[in-house]
Image (cartoon, rainbow, N blue to C red):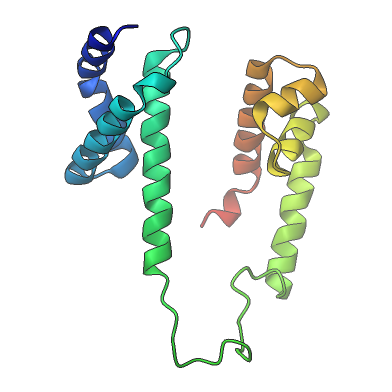
Length: 168
């Protein structure tokens, strides 16, 4: 794809990108900023685009990654540390709740719900939760990539239904 065609295609997608940005940010001004950042990043990295790759998917992936990076940056800057605190001798309350009886009970319920999944769903889901990427799971289980993604999606749906009480 030549430079002019690349730019025309990118400009033709601006409405789609704005809708995606609005979905990510839920704020019109933030979405406009994200759209601008994405457009600049895509134009700056035009040489990294491979012709046989889905252009729209590539651009939306760039946008999603920018959004995630910005989110992590905001979370880091909003973390407040009391400079006067003795960080080596802090009494830290367990935020996760796993140390409490209630937290332990909830963890057991979650584990039981995962164990109740069929092997077809549980194995790919367990690998995904363990940090494997979709394509690694597909290779490991000798399954098509789409099948792995579907099974993980259905495992999540089943778990959401069976653990509905913990959503509250």
